Amino acid sequence: MHKLAIIALAAAMGLAWSTMPAVAADSDKTVKDKAVDAKDTVKEKTSEAWDKTKEKTSEAWDKTKEKTTEAKDKVDRGIDKTRAKTREAKDKVAGKMERSDDIRQAQTALKDKGHDPGPIDGIHGPRTSAALRSYQKAENIKVTGRLDSGTRSHLMGQASATPSTATPAASPSTVNQPVPPPASVGSPSNPPMPAEKAQTK
Image (cartoon, rainbow, N blue to C red; front, side, top):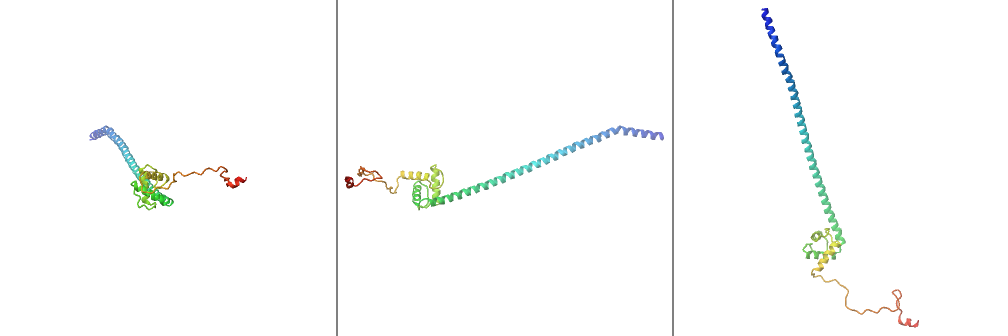
């Protein structure tokens, strides 16, 4: 029995020694697998973090663009309002500075050209300004909405070229009148003397 126990013990030890490298290899393989798995997990987490960062950066960039566009639009609207108010103020000042006869003539000429200035009353109002702007744009003149000298000469020059019911302006007569002879004695600073005094000298 003692021999049998020794043989059984020897067989068990031999089996243990022969399977030990296989078990050790499995445990080494498991450590390597765990290291690879850990490396893959780190890569995945890094990739996810990078994707989230890119997404957040993209969202922040889009929001910044949107806010910049909104701010630009607000500034543009402010500029447009300022320009409109400036134009209105210029029109008011120009209307006060222009003579009502000039405005009345311009309103008549604008109406003849097909640009409605409103009532022909000699007042430079918003409708007259709009008609002037329309005329200036159609004639390729600097668009101001005012009856400035360039617009006046262009409008009145064309208005006089078309038949008009207005009375012509007074001009010097061209009828031949006798011209008095020039003074034989004297100059503009010394008028000629009367004939009586000239004989006594």
